[in-house]
Image (cartoon, rainbow, N blue to C red; front, side):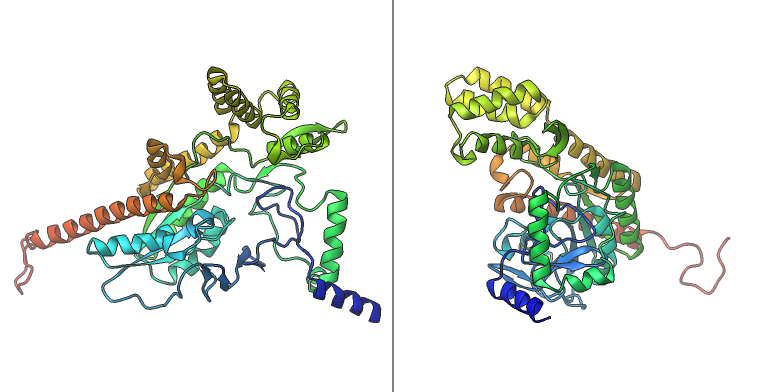
Length: 422
């Protein structure tokens, strides 16, 4: 007991990384996991929630969501707008709370004469499955409008679906996880064996049919509580392949699942070249040549080759490689299928739709994004403007309906004790 007590004390004093290593930059579910992000905490139902506190300029309120404190009572005369979504809604790559589209929307509507309060229920990494589970908390605040922004995390691979994942570990494991020494030892074992976040059998976190069902249920629930649902599609930065999901590759005579950029980096490192210093080197050319012979359908290899050809002054060759990168970008087409399901759900249910994917595509500006999926500050401003226009249109329609009802003639007998004509 003394020995283990000393080990525990030593790990807590040194404070090494005790998170489970992830095989990719998105969440890989196993029965037990922690996240490397300091603002996450485990939740037995949702998997994780946000930990209240101040993280640089980002504030997580006591309810566990980004922004100022939520109050139960709505401001008199104001419309309350709740934003349900993932890291794009949360504003994961946006430093200041005031620059996230929810906060921008409230300011924008106020400037146009419509007082509004916005509540940001976005959580990074959430799928539509988690969104549906957290919806009751959202509706407890009595919003007039609920925007819904999911799809990107739904399309990610995991070893099991969100619906099948059990986030609550067994009691003994929950007890062990309180020990920093145990968690540190587990991390070292997983790193040595290649476990942890490794993908074994790819499965979408939420497949297309379940995604559609989640949207339908969200729309129905929001309406049942007297609010107006507004569905939103997910835009992507143009020109860059979508490569976060793993692809099959050969390694040591067996099939493994790797991300394309990780494979390139590993090949470069085996040649003694740092990936961030590989541009224009013979090593990168060799890796691309060998890679394209083995994996001609990997868009990342075509994209990197386009950069090398452009660097060499071959503009025509670079354009041809970019076209091949677009043609082989299968995951981007998958995400577009999720966006199509959002559009179909809006049509089938009569829900409002703000088609961010098409609106962003018409502008085609890479400056609207901080990476392949997260909108930049200017992207959040555009989302706020599109939502403001939609809500103004809806408010105008509501006013028109109310005025129409006032102008309608009273039915026979109304306002009188005499019976009508029947």
